[in-house]
Every structure is written in C-alpha cells, then in structure tokens.
Image 1 (cartoon, helix red, strand yellow):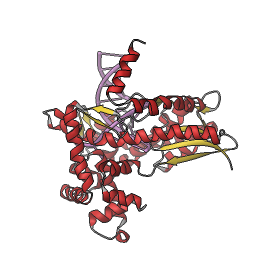
Image 2: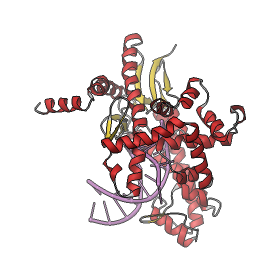
Image 3: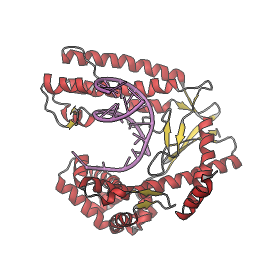
Image 4: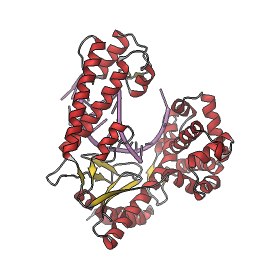
Length: 383
DNA sequence: CCTGACTCGC
DNA sequence: ATGCGAGTCAGGG
C-alpha cells in the first residue's frame, strides 16, 4: 500500500489511467472467468490420434534410418547436420552460430536432392503434433474433462495476451493433419462453439492510425484488401488481379506491418531484390498515408523515447538511438509495428469486456472461453 | 536449470 | 537481414 499512491501518480502522469481503469483492470475478471471455465476436449479422439501419430513416426524412423545407414537421434540438430552435410554430402544452405542449420526452410530447398529430406520433414511435423499437442494437451486435461489455460497479461511488449500451461493460442490449423487437433476442441453437450474473428484487424488499424485514404476506402468499400492492394501495386483493374499477384500483395501487406526490408520480402515470395524493392515503392506511392506514417512514427519514437498505442499503452525503445545499424533498424521496426499490434490488442481487450458483460446480461448461458489475438471463442447453447 | 534450434499460432 | 508469443528437445552446467 506504500506503492499504491506512487503507482497511481505514475499512471496519471503517463496518461494511462483510462487504459488501466477501462481496459486492463476490468479485463482481469474476464480472464479469471475464462481460465476457470476451460474448454472441453475429446480425450478418446485425442488418444487415437496420438496412437496413429506413433505408428506413422515409427514408419518414418525406419525409412530415415534406411537412408542414413544406421540409427541416430533425429531430434538432435547436431547429429542430423553431420549426417546430411558431412556423411551424405548435401550442400549446406545456411549456418547457425553452433553449426549447420536444418530448419524447415533449409529442408525445403534440399527436398529434391535426397529422398531422406522429405522423410525428415514428415518426421518433424509428426513428432511436433505428437509431443506438443497429442501428448501435451492430454497431460493438461483436468478432472472436469476440460483444459484450463493461464492467460498472461503482463508478459508481452505490445500489450497482447499470452497463454501458458498449455498454450491454447498456438493450436495447429494450417496443415490438414494439424487441423485435426483443433477439431478435438468440442462444446459441452447442448452447446456449439462460436468462433468470431476480426478480418484484417492490423491492416485496418494501420489504415486508421496512418489516416491513409486509399486504404480506408478499400476497407469502407468492403473489397478484399489484398486484391485491392494488388490492383494498386500492379496497376491493373481489380477484376484482372491474378492469384499470384494477390499472393504477392498479401506478402507486402503483411511485411509492411512488420517493417519488412526488400531482402526479406524477396526471400519470402521468391522474387529478385529489385522486384521486391519495386513492389514496396509502388505500394508506398499508392498508400501515401502509410509512407508518411512510417517515417513519422519512427521519428516521434526517437524523439520521445517510446511509441504508444491508440489507448496510450507505451513501449520504450532506447535502441532507436543506437549507433549499430542492425540494432537501430530492429528498433525502427519495433517502433512501426508496436502501435499497430498493440492497438489491435487494446481493441480486442475492450471487445472482451463488452462481450463478457453483454453475454452475462442477455445470454447468461453463453460463455466466453478463449482469445487468440484476433478471435474470440464462445460456448453457446444451441438454437 | 539454462540456452539454442526448431515449430506451432496470430 | 519482417513483428509478438510458448513448448519440446538436445546438450551443457
């Protein structure tokens, strides 16, 4: 209680009273309830899925060892690196500070050079699903048949939540096999799980805080933002945007939010550095507001020492004044990204408080269970 | 117990 | 040399 007046003064001085009183403090009770409610998972299906994975992993091991000419620990990147790049003589694509890199990107480039590579890629996917999800989630099922995560509200630099023991914010969804895990989360009898997610929240936040008319118009007109961006960047009518153009525009949109460089964008979508540079230049010439914002937000942060979100959440970034180019560049990307990611976090937290209260009042049997950065999962009575 | 490499999510 | 997290495993202390 000695700290209370001191901290209250700090809050007021920094203009964060509203953030605290209207968002963070009321959110605590919402998170407490969500954690207590937990979410139901189909234990029997999870067990069967784990058994299936075990069989496939075992087949995969046999195949890998037949190519390697002996057993070794496939999970050891050191042992795997020695096998691939010394014993089998494959060309090392990338190095880590301790040896050869064997990550997914490297394996992707080598997959046609030796039949052991696709087997290792399969092995990695299967063992990830088995250990982290099939076995990992099984251990977390409580007596009530539900999984109760812990939401951390004080660990991220941007204001997002994180989820631990288990992490329910990184349940697989992208691969077909991975998506099977997600399907095992089920509603309690008589209910359905409703998954409500924001569409492109970070780009909408960017359009708003950058005050970019072209991007705001695209959203107001309810057009697909990646298609609209492709039309702008490639100078073609919306109807003539090809799937490839849309994919590239999507990567640029994505990259802008993270403060991407032409190098990384080129790597990401497989075009030359010069093409990537041209994409970015074209993008910024069409979204002038975004271009101005990118410079302004970094300059502001350098001057004040911090960036802030729409609701005044701060992140101090002293590295903006670093004399080391890489350190400084990294800080500039943070200064650019934090207001976007952080404002999106502010908004969904506000939505959570309102959803929790509205449900309690109007639909008391419907329960908010999970938040995954831009989506809310609610357990609702059927009908 | 910690770090690094890797892979999962948004 | 694209932002924010967490869990698992190997390997070392």
